Length: 138
Image (cartoon, rainbow, N blue to C red; front, top):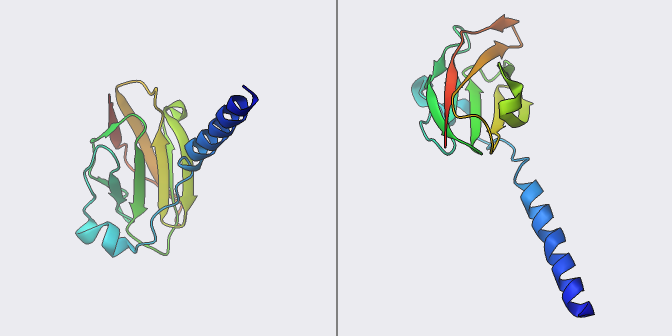
């Protein structure tokens, strides 16, 4: 019985660590031209890459559909400038990180199934973009 308790306790600790470790995924070490060839994003419900034009702050693709629990990587087209993404309803986002021209978010597993508007901000020039959105799907 004592052996079973030790094994179960160890298993719970290991699973907890593995679960938490996947929530802080850093952006991939790629250049802008590899992530957003010709300014085009990567349309994928499970992990899209949304390219943000550094001058106009328009998103490509806009109206991106994502699944609950998905990661989204936002990339600004100028690698020497800094990007931030602000969701209208921050409660839909479970985790957010930012580094240079990239910002990444994880949509909550229990996020409401509807539009999630956000604003792209070029921190280097102090300019906010249009009002693009992502659509959260089950």
